[in-house]
Image 1: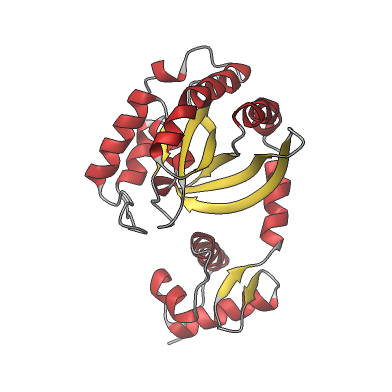
Image 2 (image 1 turned 135 degrees about the horizontal axis):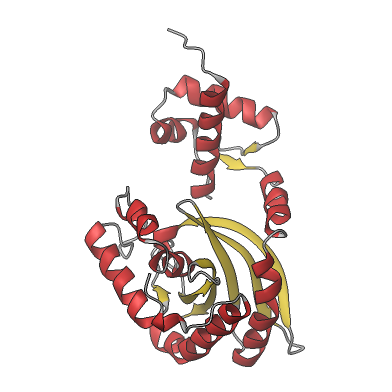
Length: 260
């Protein structure tokens, strides 16, 4: 039986589809989207067909669906409204040049970590700025975990309640494991990614950027390490970088002293 959705219900379904496509950068088939949304294949097929026709979703030859590049454009425009980027970028550029190591800046929206910009060292000795735009579940990457650990208790609890999906053997996909990780991050002031979203990913470390009220507004991440030993050598500089940027935003205590 056909059920007419209200405008609010239809919009909620569309946004849910966008979220799922964002969480699955390798794309989704009609069946996969239907399973994740809890709808019929016919409903999923009609929804995706409408989004493809509207130019919001791309369909490849294998009949897998991806967010259209238009979302990247929208994301760039939204990111320009974040004052933290303008404040953080010069400090990160200095650190990237000093350490000869690339860095990301990321924010959290809902249960997703949104990577906004990367800065990489160049042969000329300057940091090269690049706009990026992709999302990773907050519990499966270093910047997401750094932000989560220093967020308000109700924010942490909403993620801990799950569902927590296991992407690789190292994903912290139980409440107990993720809770222990959060406590470790709060004690040491930084988070480490050991291949928790992509199985073959290099190591990364991140620290939160705290605003005047002591809550995180973003995170800065050093990435590209082949082992944890190499990563740990740059952690002191990363912690210093987080403190400097947080201080520029009006936060006047060290990250390691923050207790939410």
